[in-house]
Amino acid sequence: MNTYPRKNLDFKVKADFQNSFNTTIMQEIPYENRSRGAINLSEGKINQLIAEVNTWKRLLDFSREENVQLKIRLSEILKGKSDGNLLDELENFQSKFIRHDELINLLKKEIAALDQLLGSLDMDDRHIINLAGRKLTSLRNTIAEIEGLFFKLQFDFNAYLAVNM
Image 1 (cartoon, rainbow, N blue to C red):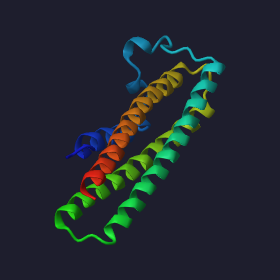
Image 2 (cartoon, rainbow, N blue to C red; image 1 turned 90 degrees about the vertical axis):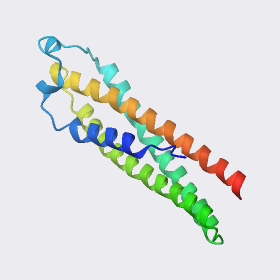
Image 3 (tube, rainbow, N blue to C red; image 1 turned 60 degrees about the vertical axis):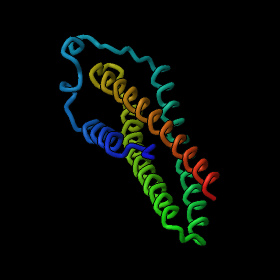
């Protein structure tokens, strides 16, 4: 019942995060887009992207709070249980909750770096604008994937408890 694929997702997310701001701008921008800007961001567009980043921050805060509630529920269940099979599965859920916290922390760091980049964008620097645009797209996709997996984890946990409690 591996609904939160650690190996694939963790590797992908960590690799994306480790590489995200550590590479040079010229390595990040496709050759055909280097001489002309591929993304034209107006001040209004940048403000929209900053608003989206702020939405992500709130979403991650909410996700963290939901994860805390799941862990509290788990600890309440564990207080009176000694069934080996039940304990094994509950330990599995606990590990998934902890991994979700780790992913939230990684995302929050990445969002903070992106937020800082967006706040200091020079509208004349097309290379930085292209980099920020691609980082936003990558983060948008990663957050959507992680939130979808977390929703499934919540659902699986509650369904498991409904059947086994």
